[in-house]
Structures are given as C-alpha cells and as structure tokens.
Length: 456
Image (cartoon, rainbow, N blue to C red; front, side, top):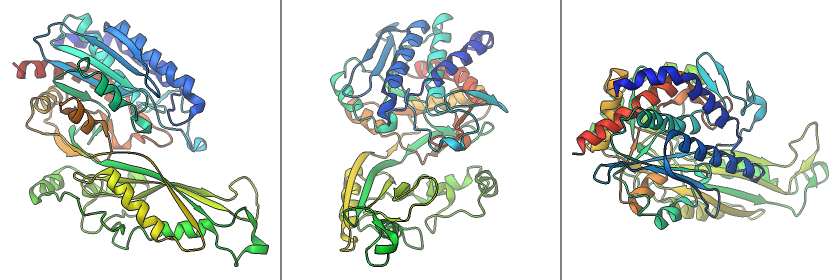
C-alpha cells in the first residue's frame, strides 16, 4: 500500500474538489423542502462510485430517501468489507451564526467549513477515494461493498427493512464505518462504544388560543412557563434524571475500564477553553469523559412557543413545545425509555395544561470488541500512518445502525473515524480538517490490507 502515496499526492486537488461538489448539495433529510437535493446527493454518490470503479452501482429506492449500493467482488473466497456511510446532513439553523454559507465550502486555517464536512460527507467520501486508489493501482486485497444512505440524520428509518430484504446482497465479514472522531491529530483513537438514543417532542397546551397577556396574565397558566418548570424537574441538583426507572437497566462500567478512561490524554482546562465556558456541569461522581460516554443523559434540543419574531407582541401563548433527546448506554432500550418518559411527563403535568408526547426515533447503544480481527486491523492501520498505537475509547454519540447490522446481518462493525470533537458537527461552522481528510484516505487502504491478511 505504500505505493499509493504518489497517487494520493497527485490527486489531492481533485479529491478535494469532488468533495466540495458534494458539500454544495444541501441534502438536509429532516426538511422536506430539500428532498430534491437529498436525491441529487444520492445520484452524485452513485456517479462517483462508478467513476472509482465500483460495479452493480444502483440507487435503491426506499419508502424515504434512497440507499446507494455498489460493489467490487474480486474473489468470492476473499473477505468482504461492507462500507457504510451517509450522504444526508443536519439542518443548518441558526443560520446567522455561520461565518460562511453552510453549503459554500471554504478552507480556513487548514479546515474545510461546510455542513456535512465531517458528518458524514467528508468521512464517507474518504472511502470512495481510498477505494479508487486501491483499484486504479491494482492493490485491492479483498472484496468491497458500499451502502451509503440518506436518512441517518433522521433515524435511518428505512435502513433495517432494506437490510432485511437484501441480506444476501449485503453479506460481508465486517462493516467499516467512518462517522466518529478521534482524540486529536496527534493522539489517534478508535471508537469502541456508542450511546443509544431516544428522541421525542412534547407539546403543552393551555388556553384554546393565544391570549392578551395584560387581560389574562396572572389568571391563566402560561404553557411556556409550565413547560420550563416540567423540564427543570427532569433532573435533580446532582445531574441525575428523575424519571422513575430511567437507570434500572444501566450497565455499570468496571473500575478497570474507568481507570483506562482516566488514563487517556485529556485536559479539562483545554476543554473549557475550547467551549468558552467557566466550568463543566454533569452527573455527580463522574468525570467529563465518563459523562459523555458511559452515562445516560437528558437534554432539551429545542424549545419554543408564543411570539418569537422581531419586536414585541404581548401574548400569553396557547401552546409551548420542546424537542428532547436522551442518550442511552448499554442495556437501556430506547422504546422502554420513551415509554417511561411519556408516562412520567404526563404524570407531572399540572391540571391547567394538557400534554402530548410524540416519539421521533431511537436506537440502541453498542460496544464493539477490541479483540476482533477488524479492530486489530484498524489499530495496525492507524499505527502505520500516525506512527502511534490508537487508544480505544467509547463515544458519546449514537449510530443506532451498528446494533441493527449485528442483529439483521450478523456482523460486527469497526468504527474507524477521523473527525475531531472540535469539528462542530450538528452546529454552525461545522468543519473537517484537510489533514484528517487526506489521512483517512491514506489510512483506509492499510485497513483493507491488514484485515485481509489477518483473516487468512
């Protein structure tokens, strides 16, 4: 694989320009206004897989957005790697906080600024270019299949049914995913655990219409005030979630693993400086790294109601809303947590409001083994290109399809991500380092080499 370096150097500009073309497509799966763009991104991925040398490339329809599939089978006796990624992106709000237009990628201080640059277009496209390099230089050591979806940011709602219907087509030895981060460019790491997710929306209704706040204020309950009180009661002063039964199934992490986590390079002062905060806050008795990886959480992702336009409008609103997510850890089940939340939220609602809880999507936590061939191959590949042995770390994020792949396809995943926690994914000014993009393209071929060698 060392002979691929000249090819990478000679094609860096093209690789970047192609990524920029993909980043310019506003493929926001959560907003129906962008449905044509989401489909356009799928077609772009298809075209690039064909250009890279993949065969049987197709845009597979689902009840939602399509899944792009492609493959290169060089020998049925060799191992097969299934590459997963997604071409859809998060909404860009609040738009006014972006330093540059989110779908007009720019490079600043060595970083690519654009929505989807790190999550997941930049990381997904690394695989397309690494595949191209191996194939064009006749060093592809095993079979490769691609499954790139367009609904990851809305819960991958149609992916499981696609996997169930296409088990033979997707038959592989491992799923390779680059949708995670590492500790730093100097300290590589491999994600070995992901939290689950339960995401829902609540609606609190008071009077049957917006009221004049002078005429009715003080006599009728304000749904926004009530909603804020209800949300505030969902956590106690120690950062514990107060929903009965919330922690019943939480898998406690051993002292040995907590000690390993504590040994990972981490500066709390740098963490606070990067976020421009004076102090951290979280569940008592756990470190920052533990709070963001091995402990469950509850957070309000958005809250609104009444008048939010320019100027003043003195109303007592009829309704108030909030979007709430709960990150879950191994053994917690998303549906059970949603049911517990709904029952508790309705129970604590005072009699002067009505409450509606609407589940959105969820997924289960996952832990990937560090003694597998896939993990060892990934670690060896990183060690080859970074010059350092990567550290195994659990992540606070969620990729619910990891457990689905194991359940439906019977195969484990390896989470070989090249992003950074500072990439501002899901936030304004999302970025992805040029170093990370090219280092990923350089590293991935070694994974294929070592995985093939170790599988013999």
